[in-house]
Length: 444
Ligand code: GDP
Ligand code: GDP
Image (cartoon, rainbow, N blue to C red):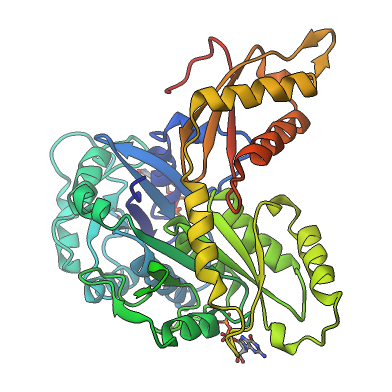
């Protein structure tokens, strides 16, 4: 599949970012919306404009108490958007006019050379352009586009402007043998150390991704295992002025990096085991449907006997129970122990996440499964599963047609998922089942 361009919405509090986001999210594809068990962060929506799919991100979500805090917050937002998005929409408010904070962020965006679309919101009147819009030329970001998020005015024009900046689909196709890897985990778990260790290996050829504005956070490299892009979520190479250890920013940064990667390396500190914060970070990867490897780091610091690894493995399985599909690797970023093993594993889980299973094969597994364990009944009605077909990869996504979706309890979905995994493997990748009652409408 083609990577979806990412559009980030930034701007001061109260300019209407969420309103705009919700308006755009209304255009989302039903296949995403209908996926059961997928509670993707509200900050994200998959959209479709003129047949091109893209992801919008609302970077907002706090209510800063004073001007200084607002500015700090906006800079943080903007920096993360610069690192991760393809296009940034800066939203301003026609009623307040250009503010100092708008100017500050506009300057930051200008320096980044990132494509920016300037949307001036709350231009609610239909008809000729409100002259108050012209003031926004002063931001130096080109033509301001007057919009009204509430009424949906100007939104199409705004999307057209974004569309102009989307990377060429052909160009992207050429990069398909490159695996994008995000290294995620809580602060101090060893993300930067691992990135440095990988890029510092002798037989690695490192270069910045040519011609992209993501140079600051993406490292392209090749070794005997393949071609990769490492996405630096620690913000290591470009130390941010904003404190990335602030929970809100580290989550936003991780979320955006996860969205554009193929494989997530989820780092766990061997000394601490799985913590609540780890569960949260890993959950983001799981919900985004990404192929994952659980990497237990700082293995060098552990005093070991012959049972230590098994015990740790059990602890990790227990702590990240929703991720039983992910392989576990024990490494030391410090000494380099087993770091080389990562690459074969990355290739493997990435391949697995792109597996395509023929409908015939799938349905014979389904027939076996329903014979072995009868589908459940509820008040005398039995679930009947008619047919199953794969509709997507990364993650493998299956539509299952049945007589009544309400009868398709979670436990039976789990059972079916396990049967599919027993037959096809699908190691390291989540899978999605979309349950459809026969005759139900849907864009498939
Ligand atoms: P955010 O903080 O940037 O996410 O802003 P919100 O989306 O929460 O909107 C802030 C306020 O502006 C809310 O009261 C919205 O109802 C209002 N608002 C948002 N968009 C528009 C618009 O297009 N026109 C008008 N008149 N009000 C809007
Ligand atoms: P980040 O915040 O996730 O990027 O973590 P860092 O890479 O900055 O590492 C945090 C600290 O842990 C540093 O002092 C590292 O030297 C140390 N560290 C990282 N990986 C290892 C490891 O495998 N073994 C040991 N002993 N220390 C490590």
